[in-house]
Image (cartoon, rainbow, N blue to C red; front, side, top):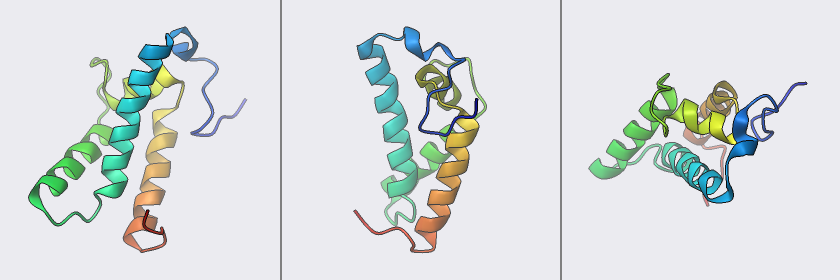
Length: 102
């Protein structure tokens, strides 16, 4: 069965997470995605630094740290590679001015 980034991977252990744990993982992933997308093109030093760290977090192949991008995605039942591809497309669209500001 094929899944999209918004569909949980049925083969992963995301079902075992309790509500609060799941919420924490979701909040970490959400913040990382927002920092990549919303701070793209930031002109102030702190904004650029946060964006750079968020992009590095998403790009990392680290799996031993519980809140690494890969571990966070997998804990929620998402495939990290699919999320990365979608973020790359959205970042490109943002850079080209195709996304409307929020």
